[in-house]
Structure formats: structure tokens, C-alpha cells
Image (tube, rainbow, N blue to C red; front, top):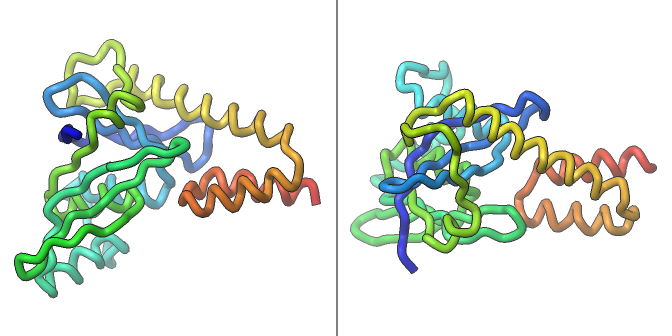
Length: 203
């Protein structure tokens, strides 16, 4: 399978969902975008890495990992978003120490946060981009995040939230508990939080 390199286009905050963000990855030498829903902490970490002038007074978790890796001569060579299952992206960090290469499983938001700090390239497979990639209308600059992009990303986040809410109201308690376990196993923590809230309302 062929790899496609991605750049970070920007982060969109949902005006309708508190704490919901969409990280937009842009296809290099192409027009498709890959939106990935992430949490507030991950969005903050990525935003800080993008803004070189911002320096937190104490290291964030990803900064600590970078400092730790530098101390022990570990280098991240690249990040690959290698799988998409039920709306959840799975990623691998390719790192190297003493000329020995290792592959480490990671949440996509964490992998991208680290890729930024190591200035490592980000890739995905063509079939994932074919399945989940979208065309943002009205934007001819692939690296510039416009108001139209913000509106479209907010619609994507809102549609996701509405579909989740409708599904939850029609589920039995047993189904909710099963979905909660699956959401945690898939590291889809925002969905897990909504499921937990729905279960709490019924108890």
C-alpha cells in the first residue's frame, strides 16, 4: 500500500460542542483533507507545538517525552496513521535508537503531537485517505485555514454529536454498557463520556 504524506492544516473548535476539536490534516500534493476529532488537552498540546513563540512554564506531557527521548538519544523518524476502525484512527510511531528501529502503537493525537516536536513527517495510507478524506470547498490554499473550513468542520462535529445523541436515547442500559466498554477499548474517550453520562441519567 502506498503512503501519502500529510501536513497539519489547522485545528477547528466546535461552536456547538464544548471541548470538541477537529484536527485537519492536509494531503501533500493533493486537495483532500483528513479531519480527526480530538480532545481539548490534545488540541492544546498540538497548538502549542505549532506556535513556536508559546512556551509553557513547565513541560507538558509531550514536551516531557521529547526531553526524555533527547536525553536517551531516541529519535522519532515518522508517524503513520495506519488504520481506521469505527471512526477511530490508529497510528504508529517509528523511532530509532542506536540505529535500531522500533514501532510503537499510539493514539493519533499523541503521535502527531510528538511528530511536531521531533519535526517528523506524518503519513497515512492511500486507502485510508480514500475512505475518510474530504474536499474542503472554496479554499485554494492547502495550508491556510479559512472561515469556510471552520463552518464545515463544525458541521462535521455537530453531525457526529447529533447522531451519537439520537443513538444513545434509543439504546438499552445493557447496550450502553457494552458500547461504553468498546469506546474505552478503542480509546474514543469523548464518546465514552457521553455514554457514561447517559447511563448515569438512567440510574
